[in-house]
Length: 390
Image (cartoon, rainbow, N blue to C red; front, top):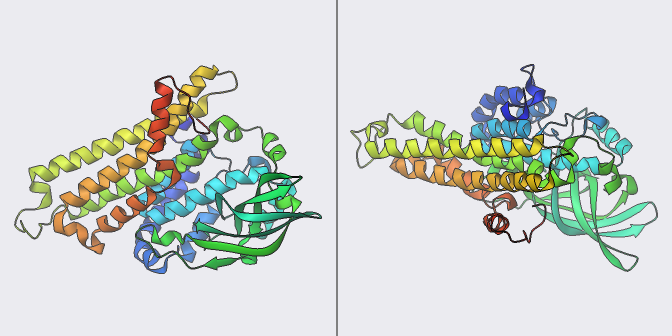
């Protein structure tokens, strides 16, 4: 089995994808509770932790799963199909577990021991913190917004600016969530269960062992940490949110397709030709987007150090483009179904209403920026990317 068909970690039928699909019914059954509480249930968090669904990108050298991006995509897709917030918390933590490759190995092993064998992370790449160099580490203060999964995380990876030797530097620090403050700000349209509040620390000492250093990443030998694939690997699970939400919307529509609507109460949705057309378009659109992701990301992943640089550039471009395309296609699919469902769609019980909100909020993520289409267009037409990691 290759990365293209599910990932080597699921060969035995008990890997992360299998675990995510096994937990999907629990996520679906908990969706209303998650939405109302603004966080995942303790039962679900414990089960996901045991299955290592929060730290799939943690290096194997540190005791982590070090899953390939297709495995991560398929696992998050299964969770997001059941409930977008569950998938969102997983993908955020997975991306941050990738960053832990940049930290002192012994410090990370100690973190794993403190967390009972598996890590749950939150974090932000926006440099909203301030780090002041002191003996043995940094004094850190900052407040980061959109701290997804922070309600369930043991560790927060915050990006800071630091003035050192007359130069401004960027430092990523890893701090215990318990050492900071979660500030309740997450009153939003969708992804309500992700608990993406603000997180703040004030004059917190962070030892050097909890400050990222490039030499630690360079010491990793697995392909997951190849610099050229950084954004492909980290955003593959983000694409899975869109793919999963769209498939969940199709599931929700099918469940109510036997009902009529206010203006045509005597004709079931599934009996109407215009509705049938919308469903056919929705299924084909998300199927095509999913196939593009699996193919493009899989090809980039299967490249190696001997791959021709020009060919690798084309693979990375296709993979990056497929991720953005998947998220935009997902919104189009959910919109199609929401409008095809008529008055049935507006009720919370339909499941479409929540997925419509979730899909549109997920679209605000950096992976879905329309400017990525511009960058791909520049590259295709022979211009420089003008953007990093392309």
